[in-house]
Structure formats: C-alpha cells, structure tokens
Length: 145
Image (cartoon, rainbow, N blue to C red; front, side):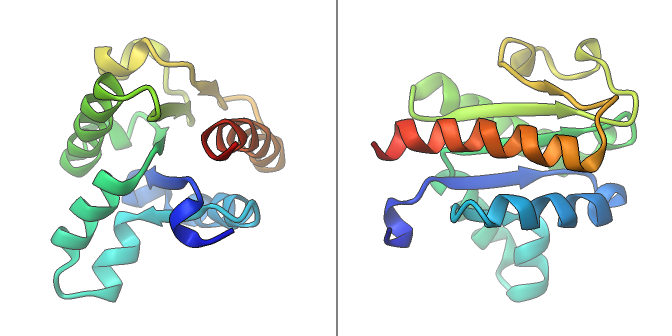
C-alpha cells in the first residue's frame, strides 16, 4: 500500500516517557502505518516546528500517552488541542487517549474525555502493545477499506 494511502498515526507523549514509547512505536510501525511524533522532527530537521505542524495536520489517528507527569507539557496540550479540533471537524479522525502511570480519566482535558481510550495503568508493555495493535488494525481497516 503506498504511504499516502496508509492511515497516519501521530504519537504524543511527555519526554520523560520516551523510552517506553519507543518500544510501543516499534509495535505500531509493524502494522505498516505511517507513524510520527515530535521527537522525529526535532532530530531530523532544523524546521521541526513546521514539520510537526504538517504531521499534526496529516494525521488521522492520534495516540496520546497520558501520565500525571506529562499533563503539564505545553506541547502535549497543544497537540491535544489540534487533535480535538480535527476530530470535531471530521469523522475520519480518531483520538485515542492512553492512560498510564496512574493517570485517571478526570486528569485529562475535558475535550478528550468524550473519546474512547485505553486505561493502560494495569497493563504490561506487551499487553498494551497488543491492545494498540487490535485497536489500530480496526481503525486502519475502516479508513482504507
């Protein structure tokens, strides 16, 4: 399948969680989806903000890994706002909050509480990877098919 036809997944997380997320990203990439996050652009380009904005506009699936530490991140909150606005404008956009490290539904911004998410607080990394795989496969089949 050409890249332009693949669903595009944007992963948002706090920098303190990056090692865990890198492992989960590998599982997501195995699904042959286009995957991006802000770390991709910060290291790859001097115009990373422009690249980040382009990725945010192109994405049709947003994964937000939410932890109590990450909720104070200005970038994460910016990314949530973009995703929520895009989801309210298009039924082709899916936002999936993933609660981790003790985060609760009441902790996340109200605009994301209405979305279906994953409470991964009691999941191992492999259980979360499998749950994400099943969720993303179902979404990508609907968007491509």
